[in-house]
Length: 113
Figure 1 (cartoon, one colour):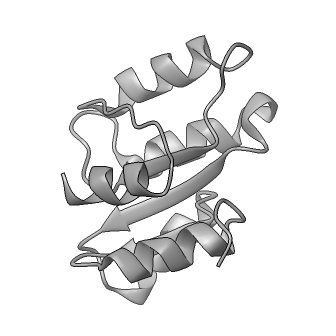
Figure 2 (cartoon, rainbow, N blue to C red; figure 1 turned 45 degrees about the horizontal axis):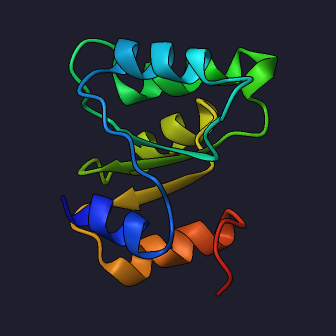
């Protein structure tokens, strides 16, 4: 809810899906018609997890310009390295603040600092 509000406050239209496979299906359906600019992934999604979703998206050239932000409670450097290795562009550790998310969006070129 907090993340949704932050994103909507800066002008994003937010679509939430409960599970990684459903996220991939939605992204593939909208790839050519009204594509997304950003995908916010949770590390511990049910079924297909956030890392697996990131890997699947990065393996598909049709999503090369899609920006990926991982939000998670995983704080170990190994987790950060795994996320970056999977193709995640930015990483925010929970609990995060509005300022942290805004900073990540600015680094991704999605908002003006």
